[in-house]
Image (cartoon, rainbow, N blue to C red; front, side):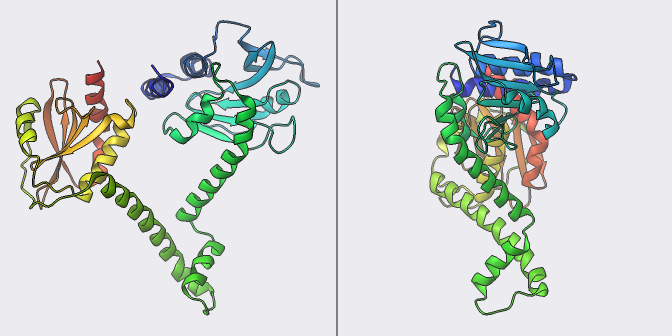
Length: 364
């Protein structure tokens, strides 16, 4: 199992067990120790690699402990502080890491609740832990662009100098992305003024203009992002032409429709709604497998979403050809399809567990 698969497996474990985890000790045993072992690659039972309840006297705080210290060649390389999974991570939780960071050789500090991992270093002042993390790994929503940097902290590929070099760029990119997200959601006056001045070169930016222009900026930003996503989807998947057909709700076997799907490979149109529905199903199902294993295959009768591009491994079907009604088909352990009426694409999320269950059935 490669690095990405191990991370996906741990993420699935976190999702399935989080409701049973009520204490910090349970969080460490169920989530954090597997992260140190399976993801970072350190032997949690070897005290020369992982020291639990690490103690280093810090000023008047004698005997204070950090949950784990990762060792290499007898020196502390990383410090890990854990909190229970049901609680959020706050700056107060990092107080012990701050104190220990300055009295050890550690260049990396990790604050975690087993679901989110915040990685810190000393970019702002040498030997003093930064107030903001340079990398945040959320197992509920893994950002695959961060994984190359995470690999550099594994036992096999440990390269702290390379991580530190990349940390500043990661920190700034993360800050810019968060700023953009905040402006798209609730744009500040200067952000609105920037776009206003680009549209009205010689017009005064008054309070009335701000009130009028703010929702326009939000709407334009939302439409632009949607346009970019749709354009990428159309480029990747292409489109054809076909008149829609009516598909009544009901149940059928996936095996019974294989031949029909194989024959219906001409005269097919892939609509934007089908592509958007595919992305929602993919987002749900990729909690169980890599996203690239979730493949779409359109036919005249329905839009199929398959595991490994195998028409005998259907994850879901989108029956969107009717002008008046749209249905989502989901599959049980016997690959029997049950269709559910959708009032909007967001209703697909109501069947997330059935979609994940279909994937798990093929994984055994």
